Amino acid sequence: MVKLTTFLFISGGEIFFILLIVVMVFGAKNVPDIAKGLGKGMRQLKDATNDIKTEITKSAERNGLDTSITDGVNEELKKVKDDLEEFTGSVRRKL
Image 1 (cartoon, rainbow, N blue to C red):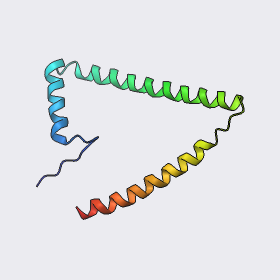
Image 2 (image 1 turned 90 degrees about the vertical axis):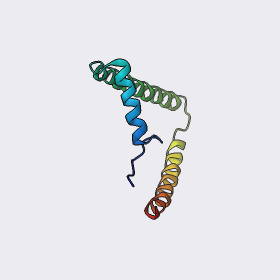
Image 3 (image 1 turned 90 degrees about the horizontal axis):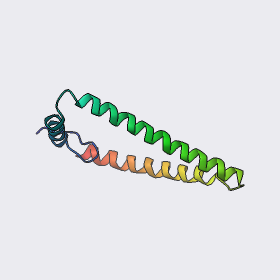
Image 4 (image 1 turned 30 degrees about the vertical axis):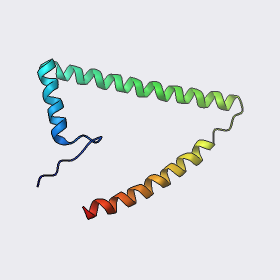
């Protein structure tokens, strides 16, 4: 039995089907330009969200608000993530 990896809950066959439809709709010549544009757009979105997060943090610090709470939250999230990875790793090995 062939096991295809999943990416964001999409199997390999579904990714192939989506790529086939994209090539049919836009043509093989336009696909690299579309991917390049999507990459640039995603990068701009990431930069914008980082800028907003930085501005909010700076504004909170200027107004005397405690921003150290995020450190505690990040530590707890890391612990939960590690525990989840440990659990799912044992489940994956059993399958």
